[in-house]
Length: 541
Image (cartoon, rainbow, N blue to C red; front, side, top):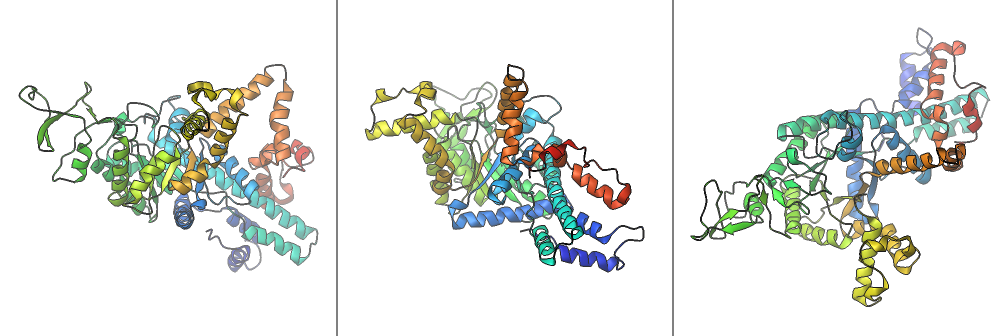
């Protein structure tokens, strides 16, 4: 969807300003052309605008064919995001269908000034916008480095007297260069306050480049991680108000097609903070209230001082109230509340995508809820959290075991139940192989059967960093010493063609040399000379 001008168009524009081929102080037009093309986006608001269009096109493609689902990994630094996109481009030749997920959990846990914090909206609001900004700076720098390499190749070809066909081929690669910039789905938690606070923060995230904001229906000041206990939801009118606040922010900033993901935590939330006011039967408030756990008020159980009473189903009842003032929902009503939440978010809140937080990765469970939602909103689509909070191995092995027992394929005693199924002794068994096969198919299945447009993993780079540092530290501080680094990292980087093995180039050393040449000519003090140790990796792309 990139609308950048071509090399020829840019050069013609610059030459129109400087017909002599250079500025009055000696800057060559070709250098100006290169810098203009390397600067792939003028502002991060331009990124938000274009990436919203990318997401909309991807959503339309998914509606045509569910095989066109999209994916992302949660990144807690610009470098993580940059390396992810480089890897995808190296593998597929394109980053289409790949996004970056910005997790509020990882901002709280790794990117705030107060240390490692739980996912309870205790981190600074500005940390979320700062990370979006950082990610896009890193992705844009990847563009600059890659395009600079192409322009260096173009310069070398011209200096070597290459034919016009060879020159045109390099220019074609410049013109068709695919940016590393991709959409970010940014977690705004529960909005960090009231609807006005949500709107103000949403604007900052959009200005930083976010084309898609995800907001959840928990209470802001009681927010919990979606995979922990103690979650408290807000009435649907309150959540719709915040969805509208986010939409207002997109409209004000000129991102008319910005994407909103409405997340419901109702499946695992058994509490609400307040009882909304119902004005008529069947309105949003009454549909929310009907799931409260209540006790009938009778002469034997009269209304006591300070208690709340409501009329429900022709009876006067008291909602069950906890010592902390919160109200309980009826047991086993989460699925019904999820379906109603989602329908309200789509039809009255103007949400574009849904997010249903679940306790286990179960395709059938998600599909059953989505099928109900689609009876009202046929094209309802989801973003799904393929969460590291799930024990994937244990969950899928349990699912296979239960299914095979029900089908009579195995007896209950053939495989143990519970955590014993995690044992490595079952890895090579028929059950272990089937569970792994389902794991490999999981995103295909959930996208085809349960309306999942976007598959993400929230915290992969958190766990990857922890595992990687553990692996390196065990070897380096153990008996392997340097062999631990070389065999597990550097040798693999070289053999896979990971560009970061040339770490000086990766962070823009050659880019800096090019600029020095542009402004200083032969006087330029360059880093990329004969004594640069990066030359040892010259054969590595």
